[in-house]
Image (cartoon, rainbow, N blue to C red; front, side, top):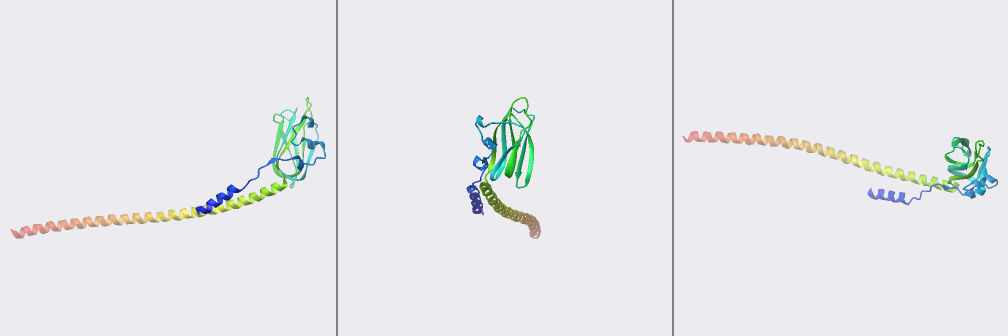
Length: 219
C-alpha cells in the first residue's frame, strides 16, 4: 500500500499545472485604436477618457481571470463600467478606482468586453493601459484536462486513505478484542491465585492438625 501512495505522490509531482498569464495582443482583434491599450507602456498610446465605451474583442474565446485598467485623472470615488460577453451571455459591473487603477475578477470564457469611464471631471483624464490575465482557448482546454487528471489522482488518494482508515479501524478492533481477552485472562489468573492461596491455607491447617494429633498420640 505504501508503494501505491508513493506512486500517486510521484504522479502528482510530475503534473505541470498551468497558471494564468498576461494575454498577448495577438489574441486581440486590432481593428480599432482602443486595442493599442492592451499591455500598453507607452504614453503615446494613452487615450482620452471620454464617457463612452472602449470596445475590445478576441480572435477566439479567451479564458479571462481578471481585467485591470490603469488611468490618470480620475478621483477614487468614481467608478469604471465593465461590460463583457461570455458563453453565458452579456453581463456588466462597476468598479471604483483606487489610485488610478481598478480591476475586475472574472474567471469566464469571453468573446469580447468593453469599459466605460465616468463623466469627465476638472482634470483631463486618460486611459493608460488595459491588462488581461487568463488563458488562451488551447491552454484553457489543457488546464481542464489537468483538472480532470488531478480529480482522478484525488479519487485514487481518497481510495488509498479509505483503505488505510479501514485497516486502522480493523487493527483497533483487534486490539480492543485482545485487550478484552487479556483483561479476562488476568481476572481468571487472579481467581486461580486466590484459589491456590485458599488451598495452601487449607494444607497448612491440615498439617497443623496432623502435628497436634501426632503429639497427642505420642504422649
